Length: 231
Image (cartoon, rainbow, N blue to C red; front, side, top):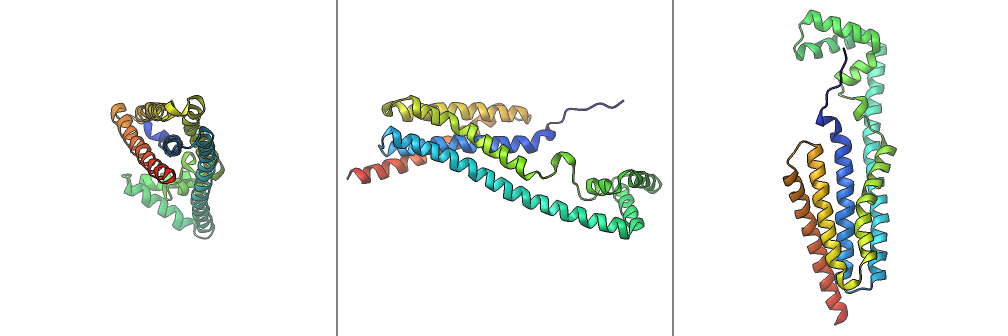
């Protein structure tokens, strides 16, 4: 009987991308809003900066992921094309190479040869892609999917601090944006850690720490430029 076991490593790829995008959107947008607000600009300027940061960040994430994953896809396609040529020109050598991989993994030579023969008859290219190149269907490069997912994750993370900047007056804006963003970062870090099987407290603490550092840094920059503008 077949059964599917639950493995946390199955979700490492999409979990990393989603957490990275949402964290980036939340930290960068809240830091941008806090920095512009600290420079004593009007609320319109703060909101405009937040919207611009959301759009620019989402598009930047999409472009970066698309270029990066496209390069990975090109490399995978080149490796598969080479394997396809080798299977066509040297099938026996490729079959022996596959058997050697299974021997290295602990099978006896006779059993390794039988496995290599059966897998070659079933799907030779798939066997070499999986066992020689390490290419799995679940981890194959998908540039468009990666670009859309990264942009969506960034936008989802950037939306809360932008909404807070629109809701609260300037005299309370910084406090609410910083406080709300840190709470959301703690929740996001804890959830990501829980899904990955790590300590929720540690996951929340490290994300909150770096978020606080980023917002404190941009607030300081905003105050310095605001003071220079006032003088």
